Amino acid sequence: MVENLTVREEKIVTFLAQSDGYVSANRLADFLNVSQKTIYRDITSIKKKMGSDDFIKQSQGKGLQLDVSSLHIINHHNIEYRQTFFLGMSATERRKHLLILLLLQSPQETSIKSLSEYYYVSNASIVNDLRSIEKQLEIYKLTMIRSHKGTYVNGKEKDIRKMLMYILEYMPVSFQENPYLDRESYRYMFEEFSQDDFEFIRHLLKDVENMLYANIKDPYYINIFTHLVILIKRLRNNSFKAEYEVLQEKDTEIKNEQIFQVAQYVIKKINQYISLKVPEIEVFYIYQYLISCGIEAQENVIIGLTANNSKEKVMTLELIQNVSQRMKVDFISDITLQKNLFLHMCSLLKRVEYDISIYNPLLQEIKKEFSVMFDVVQNSFNDQKNFPVWQNISDDEISYIVVYFQASLEKQSSVKRVLIVCSSGIGTSHLLKTRVKNAFPEWEIVNTVSANHITQVLENEKIDLVLTTIHLNLQKDIPTVLVSALFNKLDILKVKNIVTAI
Image (cartoon, rainbow, N blue to C red; front, side, top):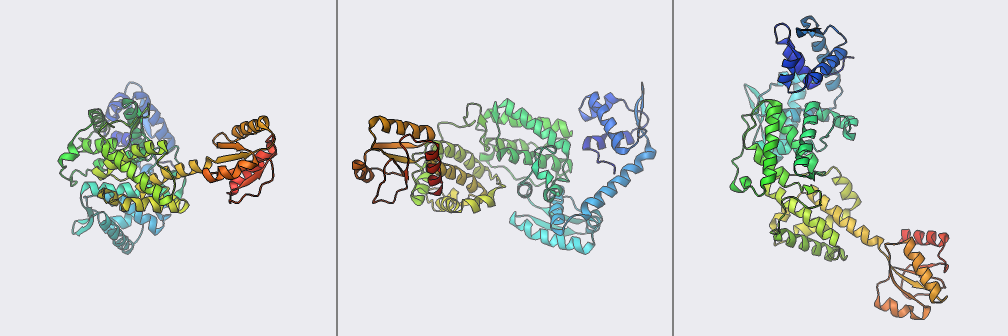
């Protein structure tokens, strides 16, 4: 079977088909903003995919010319490929693909007849698909308009993109190396997007990171990546009639000039890439995405963070205190948790301010695996009277915060407060203490005592585990392990088994 042409290869074929006579490689390179070397490499690829060296004629001194008689190869291949692709879809997959298509084309009309031909199904199937899609649109304040001209999705540009962002939660950052594209259930979702666009955006975001001397981490990388893919596709689809909202003063307020200049650079590069004028309002959208994604500089400092973030600090501490009370666990003493949660909260509040959503592909797994922690954090958000904005936090946002608390909880669980009971003399007790510390460096050895002093220690200290060289009958229900004074490998194994069972 003939392979698919890339977007750039299709542009080369189209350019040559519309040209009279030969075209120089230099002219094609200028048109596509690539090197001549890239053009010749693409020409070789096109010939190979079309299965004919004569598909494009090359003449030294003249240039390149398309063999028009071979164009039927492409037309036949496109029909063959689309039939195989769409006929293999389930009704659910087709509806999702159709929804993506309508959102990307909005507000351009399309007829039921053309859609039925496109998907190789009956008119009745398309009508049923549109009814199903219409219900989903309502959630995002979008409507489906039907008129004599055709059918299209109507609504504000921000709402259209928000729905696209939700659907494309598994947007791959590379067609070559992405686990989601190996799964047939997701492959159909990205059929409307260009591999060249993916590569362009990947390099563009690398420029952004270099300009900011910083790294954009997941899920924020996927978020802004998806935003840019949708932007380019919408502009290419000539969606300039899009209904942009009038930005409020807070939306155009520039709090970080460095990031705003980077946003301007992004718009400039997109202008050059698609040879179209990007609406000026888009620079503010990109700025908002960058400022709200917690870009970490190399010294692990969030760019744009100032000493004036007192609101975020108060909110962070209140959340930690609330979760601590509900879980009866001391999260307040975890300085690492405070720092990480504060940085996350700064980004979260900007996303709430700019109405930017992030999605967590692990949401359902987190809800299932850490159900208690999820409920506690969610209730802590909902019960906050001082900060009403918290009551609008999505489950996706909550799931990311749950992970911080769960990590802190598991770290605390791994830190055991241990009492060593030894009756073989001071020297042996010191050796035992040292060997226990070497085997379990994260543990806190509260004390090393003789059997006579156990009761006093247990009354005054919180002890998680007792290691003893003599048999004991403790009144308290505390895990106890009988070990040798030399604490050998067998002792270590016994202790690990007990701790695992706790």
